Amino acid sequence: MEAEAPPFDFEAFLSLSKGKVEAALDASLGPEEPEKLRQAMRYSLLAGGKRLRPILCLAACEMTGGDPDKAIPTSVAIEMIHTMSLIHDDLPSMDNDDLRRGRPTNHKVYGDAIAILAGDALLTRAFEMVALRTKGVPEDRLLKVVGELSLVSGAPGLVGGQVVDLESEGKDVDLDTLEYIHIHKTGALLKASVICGAIIGGANDDLIQALKIYAKCIGLAFQIIDDILDVTSSSEVLGKTAGKDLIADKTTYPKLLGVNKSRERANELIQRAKYVLKPWAKKAMPLTALADYIISRDR
Ligand code: GRG
Image (tube, rainbow, N blue to C red; front, side, top):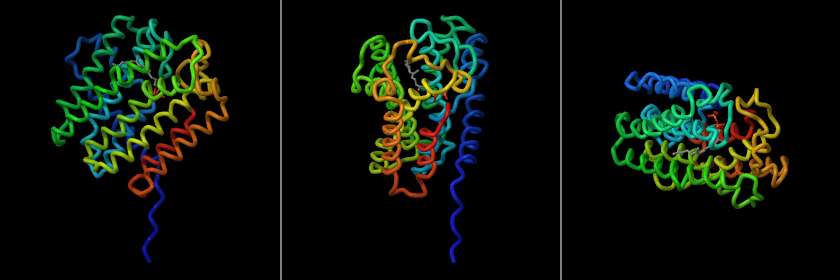
């Protein structure tokens, strides 16, 4: 009789992937930068965080038959773009926040000018990681990754979402506008994390299509849970200022639908994300477990 396969150990997978990402992030900033800039970049980049985006990237690469180690520079690049967006988001001219990842925000420690420049340096280093620091991946795949990351970082992605978010503060916003903000500001980079991993892994078109649906669903669900945690959790647990959406008079899912209906919506999205990966069964286990993690997370 064939022995039953052991259940997927999500905790072990998470801790192994996180360990690899942390080590690569630590090694990513050499002594070539002016010391103050290097310190400011490292301050935010190595401040912890769930590392969900790089882990999604590595998991998608592995699922599509690639060697996840070859996706490490891209996963670092994605975390750099994410971190830069957090540094700029926290600036006084944007969300004006004092607390991020459990410590004072970058501009509180280094001042606005260095915080802006540290963000700029992380963003540009991200593209260097993909284009110049990746080994053993065909150049056409790397070109696609660079294209994907350019799109999601700029006006069609994070920047566009942030602009609509800022313009919407203090206004009554409908569900369509809210989804636009969430999909661009948060969903886009989560989606790119999965798609870039899949590109490096050499995924075929069918799998890329399924992963696009998976990634779009988890991206929106992630931000719905973020909105819910903002009203149900504390700054100590979140490592960022809780209740901030209410203070900034932002429209959120809980504000439009209430907490229960918002959670239902996030649940539906996660079920759909898992459903589209069903044909890949065992291979999809890490991504399926990450979808469950997104909905059950407490920070
Ligand atoms: C990328 C060129 C470029 C500009 C950035 C400021 C800006 C433009 C966009 C804002 C994007 C933003 C801050 C979105 C919020 C996304 C979000 C939910 C962040 C929290 O993510 P977690 O919970 O954080 O994964 P950790 O700390 O765990 O990594």
